[in-house]
Image 1 (cartoon, rainbow, N blue to C red):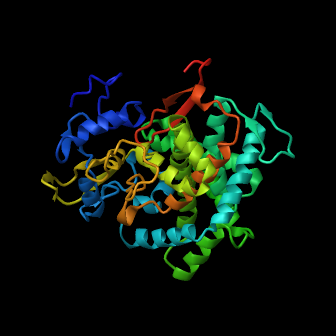
Image 2 (cartoon, rainbow, N blue to C red):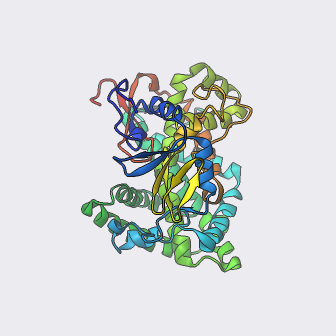
Length: 411
């Protein structure tokens, strides 16, 4: 594929995740029919929404290769112990039972409680990071934050909110955040022995912390308590799997929810008139978050492993093939959305592929969007110089994670 017009050129589909010109790359892929093979990645590349949906629904396409349910590079430590119990990395009845429990508990979270927790955490973090703030008596409080401070706030806020909702005491959350960061870092660098060793220590600490929490008197309405209660009633999810998946939820929140929130705020500078309308009409905020997610997917791609030779569309996929599903490309497929690359606040039929689909649809979609919506509205009232900050992207194989840099700072 010709990518010389992109500066710098994008060598392959994985590199697109953190490239500023990713949308142009995806548009070119969508001009090609079907699925194609990438020799450099040794993967098949699926960009079209129809192909991706067929793969999501195919029993021949699994989230992990059967012979390697845990990446060999993770070894056999605590990181691997958590990984092997994640429902998003498993198939069959174990996955279905755990997924149903987690999904029910997340969907039953009170929306008002999520909003209040998000507001409280946002104010707490902003007050600690702000260069200046208006007197506490002011409503709403005004904070002036630097680019560096906003990067930290956006990185921490979603995880802090989910941790509080889960029942974690406030004083423990910074330590949990640090351990989650080490855990996530190792998953993105499975060949890095130093990162894996650090992740194993972090994972061990997380398992200990969440085991103690589960054995303590958790608030009855906490997410962790609700999951344990449903699991006991169903008898289909052991305690260690509950703890592993609570850690897994926090790890997904740490990157994907942060990426969505940062993109939502970033788009306020791209479409200031529309954003002002959203601030004036709060009922539009959910459409805003959904459209930002569609155009700037926090999760750019995911993988599937072919367990039995199959056809997807007109493409034959042999057994043991690896398929890279470009979720961000499917979001802008013109077969699904008219004028797919345009920002339209109120689309009559918006389809998001960012959170997966079917048996492996992300159960945390509603929660991630609720946190993002509340935080976006709140930050829209702060004194931020978003339009003066440069944007780059963290190097990631599948996440689109913006980073702000003040124009006077080095990028």
